[in-house]
Length: 282
Image (cartoon, rainbow, N blue to C red; front, side):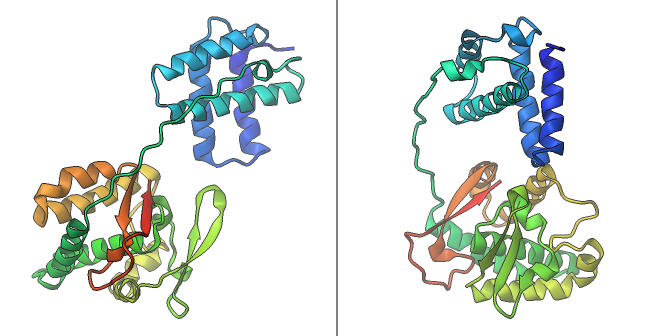
């Protein structure tokens, strides 16, 4: 029997793709985690992996990453060892003999001041209505549609980029979202301003939307990195022109997630409770 760790890692990734039908992003994360574990070893023999080997690797991870990241990498490695145990590659799973629980620091997310959000939304619409060229008007309309929809629903950037025109139900004010792991969910859009701007956006960009099939059209299919790049460009356009003192903070915060007070969900005329938060996740 082949005892090469690298060979078993390759077989496991194929198993995750063909049998478990995991998302490509999940498989990519598994590959990174397992290759990192393999690089940390001094042997290529699967039988040489012991509980001490795993403890040493996890300890090394703690020196490089935050607890949440270490926890995820540990889960990837544990799943791999369980797989080897199930197909009888190893007789004893070394993970059953170690207990490496650790606390994760709990930190409250930072919120963007209400006054800043009001200034942003007000400036967006002002810039849109005062645009003198067709290009600037169309660009600002797309920026408003994107930011309005994100703030109204709290969906991920990647989910925004996968929305098709038929996913928006203007009659019942509902939106079909294609989420992570090919899971679908329906979100109600309670903000009439958001529906109005989406309807206007659809009329202006109908030809481009029909050719690309997605609401947020581009020449090429969007991927995660392009999603962030596109949204980042919109932020820079808006904040560089309108709110230059705020660009560095928000562009940094939107790399992962940001919390927006729902009292200004997409339009400064709304008057909703400030205690409700919306999370935008990348």
